[in-house]
Length: 286
Image 1: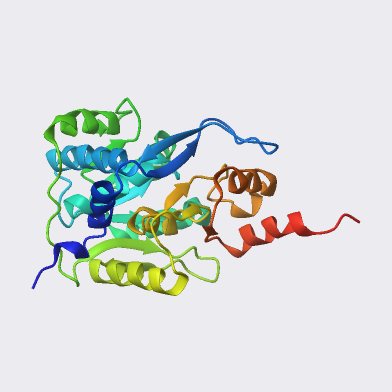
Image 2: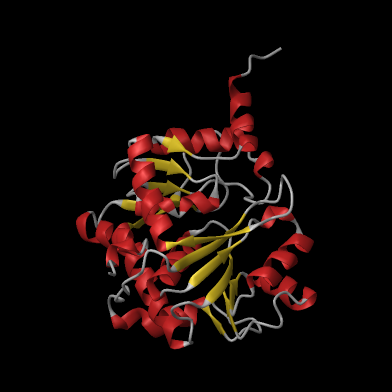
């Protein structure tokens, strides 16, 4: 028996209906000030849901639909959140790879995943074309930007295509149906692709709520991009840090602390490297 609530995108839709004015994402405008507040762009749950609806309509119009394996190479930005939930809405299977594993390993992971579509920033498309990533399986490419940049289309064109079409009907999902392919970082060996089903995502959302007592209104500093996907599903406000997600050990702890203070961050999930850097702020001066 199918259950529409199993699709993780349904959580975003529900938050948009119940808490439309609550901020879903705080994205810094420019570099973060380590010594005080920084101007951020605030995106509400209603706005994020509407944006992902528009993109979902656009994706469907170019054939990215249920079951389409789609490599997503976009840094943690509002576009990353909107695109990921749009892919869930159409039933596509986003392929998410930690960029910190290096170019060679990225190519191996993409060869293993065999994506049919590739959505990324211009830099990712340059690497794809030069290094031949997934050349045998790709049939659709989307540049995340205003221009298509030698791709089939651009994210802005997808938005324009779907903006006037209203809400996107989220398909019912089987518990065993693939929802995403996530690759491990490869820090302890060969990077491995893990198929997440809609049932796994749904169970993890409930488990995170129960284990950590997470409720709508929590504020999360998203230092771990893949976990950030759970933020909107859990009703959390996500604060995007000023850091290179592929080099977590290089996070500026003073900037992170400034954002934590500015927004009253209540939780954070991060790699040991990030926690270690933040812990340095507590070390006494010699």
